[in-house]
Amino acid sequence: MLIVYRWWGKNVISYQLSVISYQLSVISYQFLFIRLISHFSSYYRLALAEG
Image (cartoon, rainbow, N blue to C red):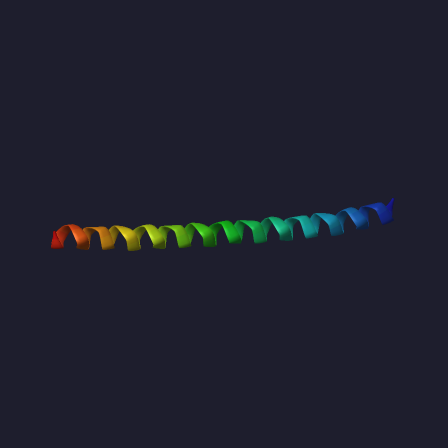
């Protein structure tokens, strides 16, 4: 029983680490996407202002 519990604990830790890394990658992708959108919108506004 103890061996099964230790194996399960290791799996839970690795699963939590994978979830955390996945969340971090999602956050970084969202940050990149927001930066791209702001960059394009400022470029678009500049083009509109120049006519």
